[in-house]
Length: 139
Length: 194
Image 1: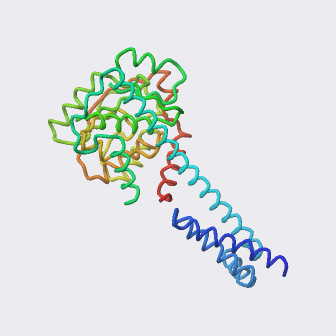
Image 2: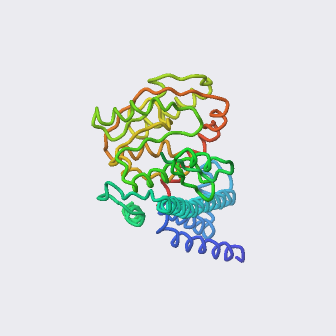
Image 3: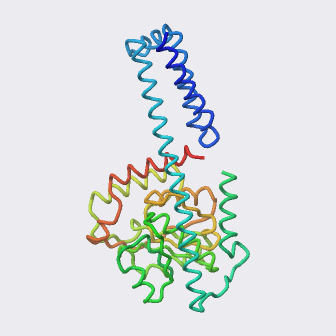
């Protein structure tokens, strides 16, 4: 009974995690949600795990629970990878802004800052970045 | 001429600037895709009507730039993509040929574009074409990403024969089989990420 309560608490933690992650990555949110629900079912109705395990050829229900836990761990790892990618995108945007701003300033200092010839589709850095933010919002 | 020094620790930036190029320096190394996007954004900000991307590892020939730019105006397309398999390849190892064929097959299957060379860094684009591109794959996956974005934009393209000359240096800098796996992971992860 104690093990069941501990596992239940952990799986509710996964459910909360799924809920919080859904907005950022619906796929991760849905996978975590399904895995946690399956885990809760197997913890409280072990016969389901046993029957499903026999059907899947796993053998014992407890093995199936372990496999599901491994699956949850992989989902968390994948999500960590996605978060790192998001951080990298921020760093990239920052580095790009610095590089372009420095180059524009250097041209200005050299007296080579001729104005853009085609200003209609984004003639300044802020306008271009604003357009990218709008693209992000749409996607 | 715009040169993007992607966190270079050698004299690239100084040499390019001395030669008259405008140098954009990333404070840290981000990858070829990030460097291309930075260069494209800068060129657009400066009012460029046409943009040519050109790898810095010596495998491209400046002589091909004219035919790419000419194709944009002659055929009224937004992208002129260089193809080594329509043109000439010098010193390409068999393993690299197989890898590029596999990458091209993958790109054709996933984008529907009938390209013959999916990972050629020598391209020309109009201002409209460049404005429709936004590379978010910092490293080698950008080559597939740019074709996905061309397909999605519905803009027109043409492939033009170019010459690619491999050297020990360019082979060391180019893609390897292990990186192809990373590209696939990156493209898959991108689809999961909102």
